[in-house]
Length: 186
Image 1: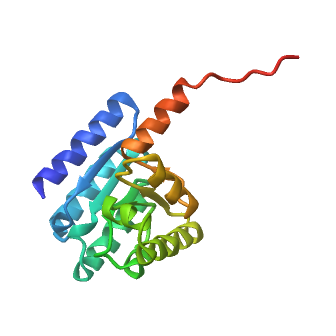
Image 2: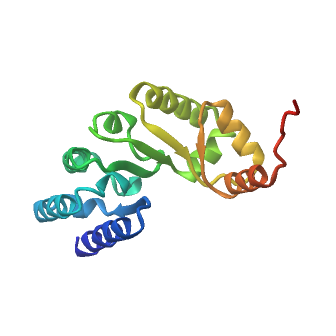
């Protein structure tokens, strides 16, 4: 809990100094303590002008249905302060039905193993398609993580995903940055 609060404080101080977004990954166990939530609220209030650049996420393997109330509370608190809120590494273990009920949830990073499986398995592909449809309806951003090659990138684009991370996404960004620009001659 203390480490998570310190990470948020350092992130907010960096935002105040540099004006750039910062992401902080908090442990679900921290969010289950009323003291953490109270101190987080105080911290966010102190940095009120900068909270819109703070991204707070909870790692999915830490998430269990018994923790849903704390995620709901965290989502409401972060939404009230204008922060971005997401789940990191969402895979097979977490129920989409639970994520749907989290107020203020703005993004979900899909686990690399789920992304790889969606390129090969009908079951995984179906799960990702359901997630993409839900994300579009709820305006939640899905990020496919850990992509290793262009074929994975193409397969997940075909399923409707638009945001990517990993080696293949980095290479695509580099290619786009170094590609010559076309100019029209009059």
